[in-house]
Length: 257
Image (cartoon, rainbow, N blue to C red; front, side):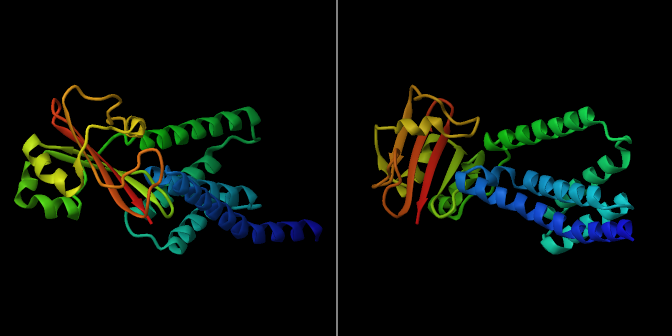
């Protein structure tokens, strides 16, 4: 009787532990959003949160652990109510956890367990760092403001990249625009006024393709009220640096609200 009672108690704990694990990881994602990393690793967090939730529930289950993992994966997808492709990453995390539970040798080898989780941790951190540096970068659609200013000249933009630096209330956004000088000279007055002063913080921004020093030939524009070393007043502010040699513009946007 005591044994059956313990088994029944563990079945009650399975969904509770999985639910808590899944949303604690989501809370971690929210904290990363505040410090400005989360948006670059959202899919990784979905995979990891699902993996942890399914793994915890499957391990706690007294029997039928693979079946339990499969059911938990489906439940997480249904509870999350995410569209494609987001729910696929939740499914991926669940499948990885199920495979780990299914093929893990018995009895449990602590040394192997540590190695496996160490590898998972390294891969996760590596993915986060790659996303933080915006690698690999993929072209993005043009913002409405750029389209409004340039009109038909948007066709002269070779590539456009957006990097969301996160934030909770205030946020930063970075653009890289590959375009001829004449196109940037048409765009820039809509963002700010000419300047010869480049904030030193500008060179410390995250993307791997971001400039790390002043180009030999450049154009620079900034919004009135833009502050490089602080928050500044409420509003949206722009700082644009155009490298004439590479024909690339880099724009730092601050949304202060």
